[in-house]
Length: 141
Picture 1: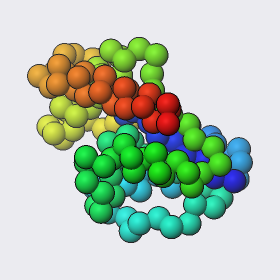
Picture 2 (picture 1 turned 180 degrees about the vertical axis):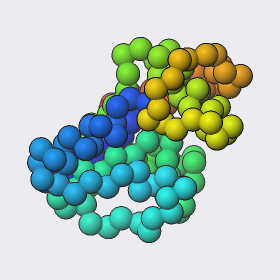
Picture 3 (picture 1 turned 90 degrees about the vertical axis):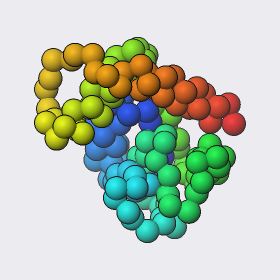
Picture 4 (picture 1 turned 180 degrees about the horizontal axis):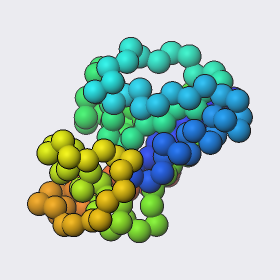
């Protein structure tokens, strides 16, 4: 069995991969296409739960091919979960706060916080809307 999670950021996907891998006794593959991780290409999709964020790409895929590449990736899995949030404003607030505070090196993704509007909020809100629409495109395919 294999499960693919394609998620927006700040949707609970890290907890979901942990629970699914525990429940089904599968290996957890956490964000292998995140450029900061730098893992080699994955070729074995058996007995895994793989989580990726919708904008993460392996080094060999160009941004303009990202959606088609993700659609092709889904074909390697028995189950696919496309994970968004009901309230995209909350998603954008959490994501923009994380991105802004990480640059200041004053915040980690699992820390509790009191939200304050950050200078990058409007741009990140537009990104969240675009990525959510891309999840819908993948779903339609």
